[in-house]
Image (cartoon, one colour):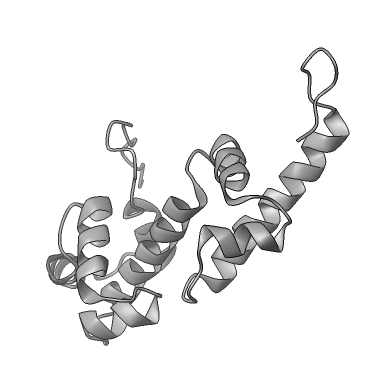
Length: 153
């Protein structure tokens, strides 16, 4: 990013950078199941990996790799609620390279293993619309942040 002599970043440059960051975010959302790394994402928008990570965190609250992991876990949660695929199939379908990594990341974000999540989700979720279920069950990376209770009424 360029800065003016006093250290203030030009508005035009900031808007250009935000546009590039949005392209990276959109690519992660679109290609989450593909092998992606920060270096590849950065080269796609002509930034260094470190610069992309810093600016992405400033714009979206988490670095690109964390956003990718969260996106993969969100998709896995949806597939687990459906109940028609094995945990292993889901692991590879959402882009994880190993079942161990998938289980670890899933447990960190959701607070339970994928198998336990599926058991709980399929036993008590009848009649809840998918759009409500997705919002209520969205993983929260920052466990210190209080997630407001959803109002369903």
